[in-house]
Image (tube, rainbow, N blue to C red; front, side):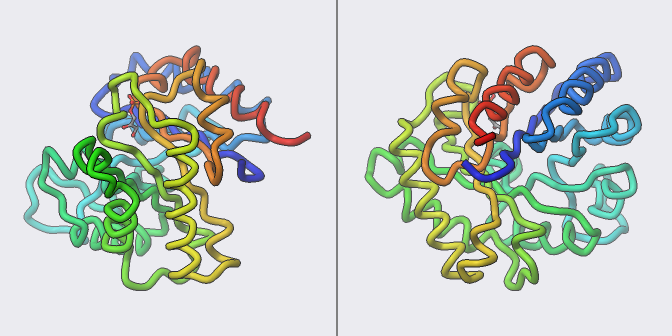
Length: 254
Ligand code: 13P
């Protein structure tokens, strides 16, 4: 486990202002668990409201457009989400790759736009069940990550988090084994060392995502090279999410 685990809630297409109370409760509890870095990525419509409600936790976006501005009806630029209070952007989530046909090249363009707007990245990668069954998961994920990263990244230690989210584990209640997660995270770490050198790579946290909950968090977070979790369904209530944050706090050596 990294020195300071990073637990990020991805609210996906959930939440109206009624959910601000959950964000407040998460923020209040996070103030007493400084060993863990806690963040939420609400939908676009709530970024500013959550940003105004919280003091401790990070607030981010779930996507951004690669361009600066212009005639792109329905799209939201990196500068816009940053202006609303986002400090990071989740990019390349498998739901965007699947539902919006996002390619690795597009994810890389979005990453460049997000960095230019002064935000950090949470770059998501993950294999389908078919790819895992074919024994090609690690080769696929490392290739996907390499192709989704911007060509140049000045200080990955400060700007990059990777999230490994097997597509078949998202929202299914199924997870890889701790050994499988450890092996994948080690493969991702090796690629980062290759790309950025050992010193920078060591500071990039690699999150696990996919059916993380308060019950399994302790085991999943103990896997090799896991620096935290990207949480979907279990991040929608403070009670469930804080169970994961507490599990992460328990893994930190005091
Ligand atoms: P679940 O935690 O609901 O499986 O979602 C994981 C995820 O996709 C987070 O980005």
